[in-house]
Length: 333
Figure 1 (cartoon, rainbow, N blue to C red):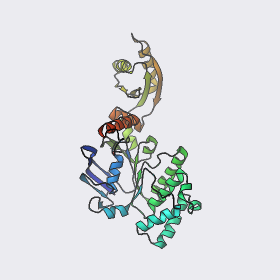
Figure 2: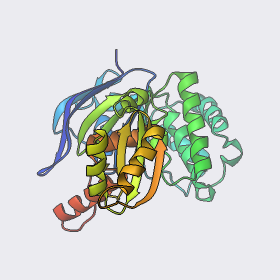
Figure 3: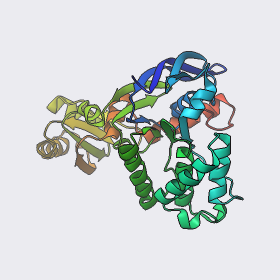
Figure 4: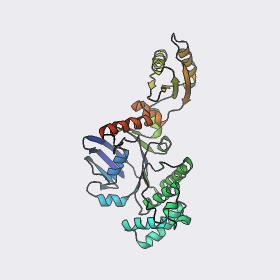
């Protein structure tokens, strides 16, 4: 039986639909990811599953509990690592954990054992009695992970868990999370717009404009692209796309960032022929750069939407500023 079941879940803010009738299920012990730009609806969905936002319509169950009718039971069953820091920096690391234990009814005896185990796991035992304001960004993130696990949740929700961290610290955090999943059988539900983090997932749901537009394993999603991915930057992408489509029967995509993306079975053989075609055309097209790679999750997003995730974030922010009179990107994340 899935530990998370979602059916036709929607959330409106006035006349704006942030999450639009999404349905999916997450199995116990799975590392499940929501991938998409800021504004896609990822955080709004997690907020509903964690009972922080009311549902407009649809239904959802977490750990067997209805998120609309059994909110307390859901909250006892989950841990949540927010996108923004939520620690009290005036308290020590241990005091932050103790406050959380009080909220969740963890006994004094259980807290003594559990806090010691978790602080050792995240390598903060020596820092436990220091004020959190003295912690680095990575240390704070590790403490938040320990806090989220203190009451033995069945599901740990992670909303952009490594945002703002340097690559080394990010890798360190992921080592903890993957070890937790392997050793404890914990279900991890991640939101991210990082391609590297998405690759860690068992399955990925790609979100755009409040909808799930694809859901599968990373490898199967990349099979949607097929073959190799050739990326060109030219003096005239539109004309280059027409020439290559006519010559090779491919379907180039022109992105807003000024690149031309072509999917082809044998990229290494395709590139020299493409260069010849563009340079020998009646009106030659100058090529500034060319690259070849295997398909990535980013290529899947481009194939499905015609945009990169960064472009989607930009257009989403502009759309929300226009809707809200310049007040920022709004609530869909």
